[in-house]
Amino acid sequence: MVSAKREKIVILTGPTAAGKTAVAFALAKLPGCKPIEIINADSLLVYREMNIGTAKPTDAELQKVPHHLINIFNPDQTFTAGDFVQLTNQAIQAVEARGNRPLIVGGTGFYLKALLFGLWDSPKSDPALRTRLEEKSNEELYKILFQADEEAALQIGGNDRYRLVRSVEVLELSGMSPTQLQKEKTGLPADPRFDLWIVDRETKELHQRIALRTQEMLKEGLVAEVEALHRKYPESRALSAVGYIQVLRYLEGVEPEGRKLKSGIEGLTEEIELATRQLVKKQRTWFKGMLKKSEARTFLLDSDLPEINNLFQEFYKK
Image 1 (tube, rainbow, N blue to C red):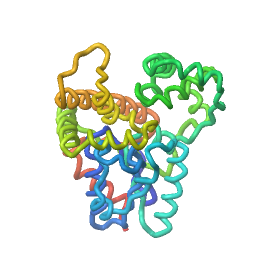
Image 2: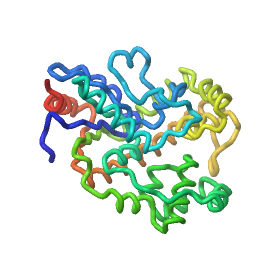
Image 3: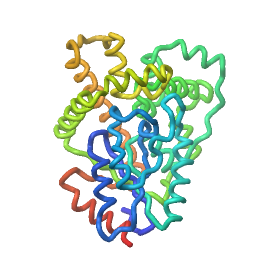
């Protein structure tokens, strides 16, 4: 286990709906710590106008603690792991130059992996191959990738078409899986600047929180948010994310293969809850991989909050 050091930068991660944001705000206000600035590591919070479906902190909350990498891109723009690493490193430098301390918060494993272990060089796109792959469905692409690189497939999921196409393209051009390529280029150990903290909850409790959050999002106007975003950014990749893609299918009257939905909002609610639970399963698989590759720390909420607070005060003390 890595001993607590003042210079360490904590990465606070965990599955969706576990409560990372609330924990981060509480940590930022602990007594005896240097001023904290939060750097976002959630792939959707970077996008403007995507508020309800991302459970984005409110403007009032964002004013309480300085934040970075939130609301910096439009939903039709591409934000890559390379962008994340570059902007995160810039933010770290700026925060530390002010005499403050950065805290990285978010659950997008693909971004965190790039930050912890480095970026890898992938082969240039091949137009003819790309055209052929674009003719395949998401399900076909996911199956190809899963058979060759289960880790990458679980991280990407079945709805992110751009990354599915690109990953299969890399696989066919290089003869190696994206995970193999990354291991060849970066390897271990993890970047010593960071200490990875994984927070989670008991599965039953987490599923209850997912159900409650889904209901709250729909009451707050998630359907209207998706309608407006789709009109303004019809080609947005970000709208393939969990929550957004289910609302789009609901609006278009598209039912999932192999099962019958309940009518109206009740059916939509169940679809979002199911997709979110599936996302949690994928995230937990990634976290297990990180425990094997790094000296990550794990905590169970809310029982481990005192331990989290004490350790954070050691890391971030004045």
